[in-house]
Length: 280
Ligand SMILES: N[C@@H](CCC(=O)N[C@@H](CS)C(=O)NCC(=O)O)C(=O)O
Image 1: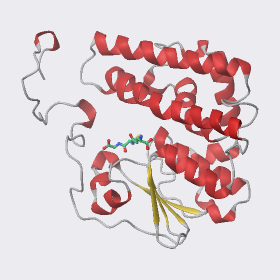
Image 2: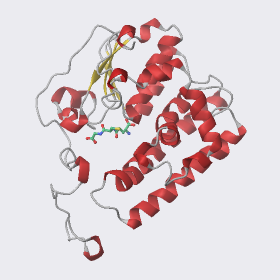
Image 3: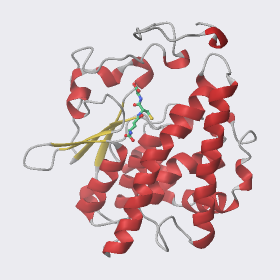
Image 4: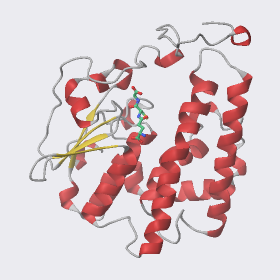
């Protein structure tokens, strides 16, 4: 690792396998499969390949919410993908998501299997398919989709920017931590001001915008994500805390948080989910 104060970028960037901190073994500048590996397929209409990171939790919460509404055809098999071990680079996974990132969904109930990648696209696909958690009125739907896209565009600054440099990077550098802490606090303020006026992000009702945003910003304000609760003074965003607590009381949310989970108390981890009884 070079001394950042003396670093001058070379004319052409080259891949230095030693850089990258915690994710050095999986991060790489090329796309595509690294090894042949088929994915398992279970008996349900939806095959989810994922891990309980915030992006993964969005989708398992959505499935649990749909099932809680009585949508039996939303049954799913959730298969654990260990991204730390490079399972997202297996050929079967890359066929479902060419971007090699969880979550990835295969709907095998359509005439030919439908693949869906990108957590926002998966939420929207399921919301449309089951006619739930998505407003019908065009203006209300536009507001919901605006917040959903806001989350998709904003969270990389929280995870890839702030989380990486504050929590995962091999050393602490003031410049990126300052830059991303400022942006994350600005985002929390955007949410806080919006939630001062409304119960949920796009109005009176809970929908896919809340599910997506709760998985990132709810986790940040309630669960000390990146061990940054004090550093970011998350408790001061009172409306965000109120909203996140309200969402986290939902049984479907509590169930969804446990699916494909490999950290925390062992009794709460459900590595693979094939049936409601797997989440006891
Ligand atoms: N924009 C994507 C981001 C997905 C993403 O970044 N997934 C991470 C885990 S949260 C991942 O699979 N990382 C593995 C890797 O980068 O190799 C989405 O929302 O689905």
